[in-house]
Amino acid sequence: VALLESTSTKDLPIGIFDSGVGGLTVAKAILKRMPSEHLLYFGDTAHMPYGDRSADHILEYSRRIADFLYQKGIKLLVIACNSASAVSFLALQQEYKGIIDVVGVIRPVVSYVVKHNINKLGIIGTKATIAAGTHEKLIKAVKPEQEICTVATPLLAPMIEEGFFNNMISQSVIDNYLSCEELCDIDALVLACTHYPLIKQEINLFYKNKVDLIDPSEIVADYVFDVLHQRDLLATDKKQDDLFFVSEHTDNFEQTTQLFYGKKVNIQEVNIWNQTDNL
Ligand code: DGL
Figure 1 (tube, helix red, strand yellow):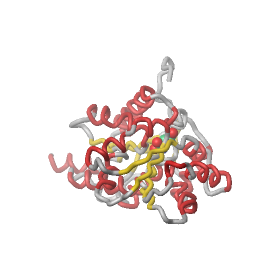
Figure 2 (cartoon, rainbow, N blue to C red):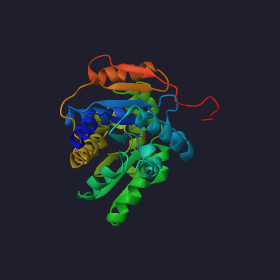
Figure 3 (cartoon, rainbow, N blue to C red):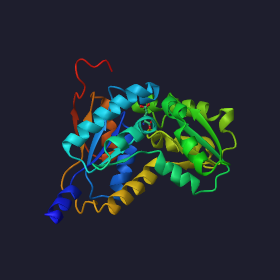
Figure 4 (cartoon, rainbow, N blue to C red):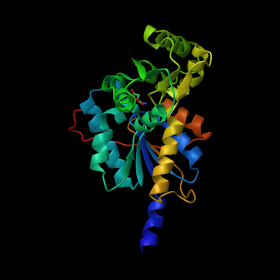
């Protein structure tokens, strides 16, 4: 019975959520690292951008989405959003303790940063992520001498969510943010928003490849692998296609998933909020 139970848990999908397309960068890295896994992805497009929302609202959205995915049957939950990880990780970890593991995108990146010798570290993210200061607090707790500068870049995620990347408009917005004084002379830059790997090329162009870009997606994928491996929960073969849920259909969500998967994927619009909610 124990063997049967553990076999069926292995076959459950990994639940993953973001405010929109940003979490796809993490989803893609997870599938590259673990091609046998299947994913249930939730993009909360109706509430995007999370980065401009209050911590209370982000926590409430995160709880609803976690519950929705959990009810569908998942073996692990990935909060593929820095804003939601900054605000909701500890609460969700506590609420699902002993039930499923919850992985955020900040702690794995912090473990990576403290293991590397970086003179001056830049961090860019949404207003919610930068205001929470989670990266900085966790890094300084281990390495108090680490020089860090953080800058909120609130236009970037909505810009990407609207499909503006790899064009002249996005390049000039990016150049404008990155030329600020705080970020001069940095050696490495944490892309502390899961949308930003989509503009990695443009960021590299600005820095002429001279600044190391720390992209959370692969670091988080390695972390997820370690957790599943330790729990003996790695899937052995992919039995089902990945499924996508959005709180509001958007053309860009459809186009970006197609870009990532190279084919049309199964996207369902769902309403997981009560009519009486004032969110
Ligand atoms: N991709 C998200 C993050 O990592 C959120 C972007 C947003 O909705 O503001 O913070």
